[in-house]
Image (cartoon, rainbow, N blue to C red; front, top):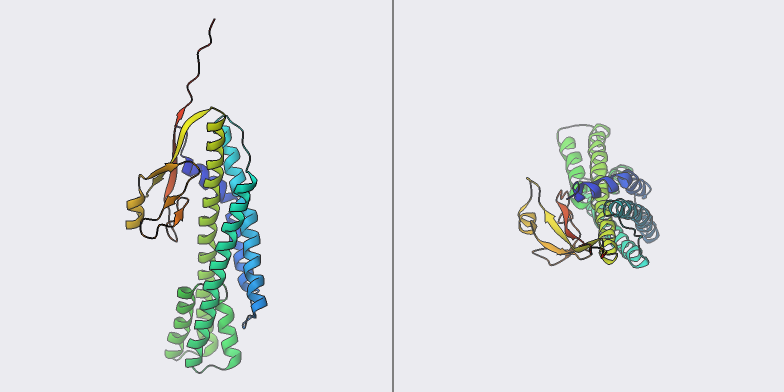
Length: 267
């Protein structure tokens, strides 16, 4: 068996993670403090477009590297490209929906604090691009600092620093999950192509947990499916590519197959 296929996927996805993370943070920074429906649409479209581009790059890179290992040739088909596009759109929609809820809930919390409009605007700007839990933490940090008697400017700086940290964390986690998922799709393509070319037989995907695996990933550990097929979440039944059972999932996928039997030449 060659070096870890999970390592190959990680290497291929690492090339695009920075670009995905940066694009998500840029999109959040562009959101106005009171986004219109058009602003939310632009936010979602911007993320979807960048995700699709970079996920495709990760898939192509992984497919190329995997094909070289398997001594075969392959290319990403139009159907796989479309699937990546749909995944990017779905993820962008989830990001936008969660962010929209975060902004709305933060405004309600700030209203209870009796802040002036200009103060509220500044706080909302610091949570644009965060999810609900992160935005709530930023708002609670501001509330706590004000409760300690800190001036608004000082309390806001502390809250903003937390918001910037959360923004980097959220964007990085999304980038890792989506780029790795795309890379596994690329390896799947190479496996299927190699099987059709007669280079390997019966390629399968195997879920491999890490030492810190959660209860869900413990149950997924060792599960196998045919190359090109999805795993299924043990609780929800949702499709999983590998390493995407939850946020910050570090599990990997290994590929198991047999080398094709070569017919002996007849003299």
